Image (cartoon, rainbow, N blue to C red; front, side, top):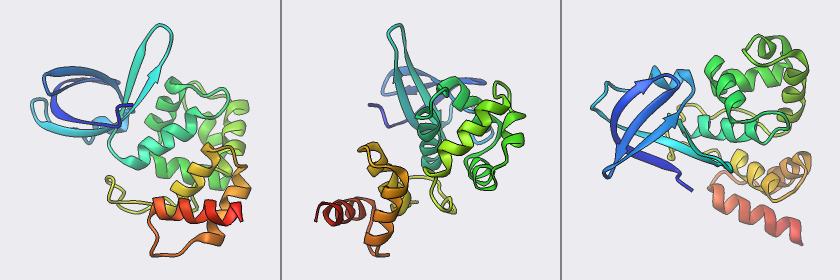
Length: 193
């Protein structure tokens, strides 16, 4: 998996951009709000990425922050939401706006985005309610901005635990001094006892 790229920004034509890293030019797709944060072409940039492998194509999606990438990954895990729809959602609102929308149960705001009807909006709200962290970490600009609780809950869900069970287990094992990896291990140890 390609987790991040750092290189020269060669072209930017929303939603596509071209980034040269180590002599290889990567075609990327990104939410529109990422383009507001990009430097001028020819400048160096670092982007978080997610690779989607299909039978007929490899697509690489780019994000400015780790929290944008986490939101994209949560969205594409939902039934009926693919990468294109996830990009449309994150182009219409940032990850904090999405989290606020989900917490408020605001299906109308989601349904106003292109490609999302009322039914899909309600399903997104219902399925994301248990997957989003309690609060998006402030100043999340990269790997230094870590949210151990959210990471641990997401990891447990990825292992097949139900969201509400994962959240309860993480809260029981949480200690402020633990980083994400330590909290995941501590939670799993508690659950296996």
